Image 1 (tube, rainbow, N blue to C red):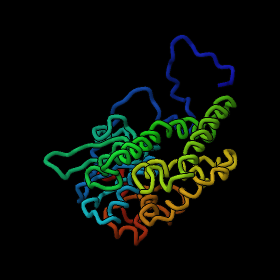
Image 2: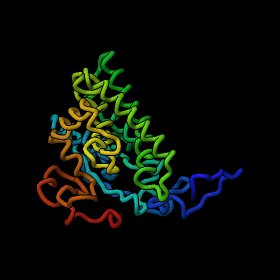
Image 3: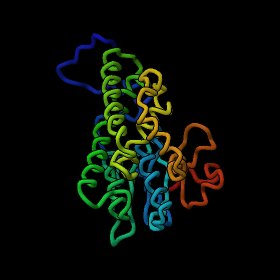
Image 4: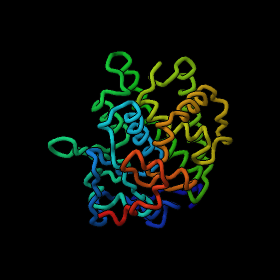
Length: 292
């Protein structure tokens, strides 16, 4: 691999290429092995990992519960993507794209699968009538920022994050190109938040729950170790918004769920009841690979 790489006329998959994620990246879809998903006692079953996309949904569920929506009680099962759990037949049935998070709602006549984090946020907001304005133009503004994040996030994660933090070869052009784009995105957010408490306006919504796990984590130095490189402290309104959301009790709980990295005290591998936060549940739950 080098900066002077010339693409061949026909691409061929090199299974050894891809750095630390080479073992789970492949050019085909579908299951690699048979494995049923576990199902707990609540209608809402979440299969996830506490990456930024996973945190979006656990924050939403904890916010719903904090707001008094008892029907939002849920079971959260850990999907270890580095071990290929997302390629089990049960998970692929829940999300044919084999990406976390995936939600299955067993509360109706037939199970409803919902995949893609933004889709799950919208589904839950409509199901419970919460964190999404019902009147225009506020609803359109909220949804615009929700889908802005869905479109912008891959350029931060799969673009900048990959080439800056994970790629086995540091390519100046790729890092420079994506760093420029991430700084532009931070400027978009900073300008919006200069005149608004939250992305949708005065109220905290699913737009904030979608953007905060990515951009808040970046500003706080929790992903990619790139805060200094990107000079994130210059985005003062993003910093204010980041810090305010980080202090919400439901956000603190949501960040713990399905976390299997970092300080053990911050990890709750599986969540089946609100009382799970009161003990170090990671030592008593069954590993997800044994949960058939």
